[in-house]
Length: 114
Image (cartoon, rainbow, N blue to C red):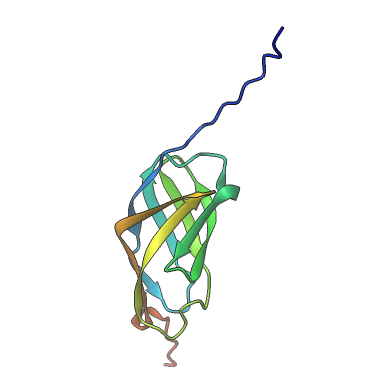
């Protein structure tokens, strides 16, 4: 008689369609919204978001169609640069060819005295 044990492999297919906003301060701290499909709900701990291979975006919430994360501070400090956003769930990574985020020195908050 068999043991009745079998292996089931589940593959999650997801895609990234857009990001918002498309630019933020060179010092980081921008909250980024990633819109797509097939994001596995309840698995934020295995999701990582990378901005241009250097900056990480810390996930604060996730649904099947939206990921919200905060871009870490200081990764591209002092550099105006447009970079691709990559979403990775364990070993599967997805790039959106039109999902560029620009680190812009003009978006640094300025304090003035009256």
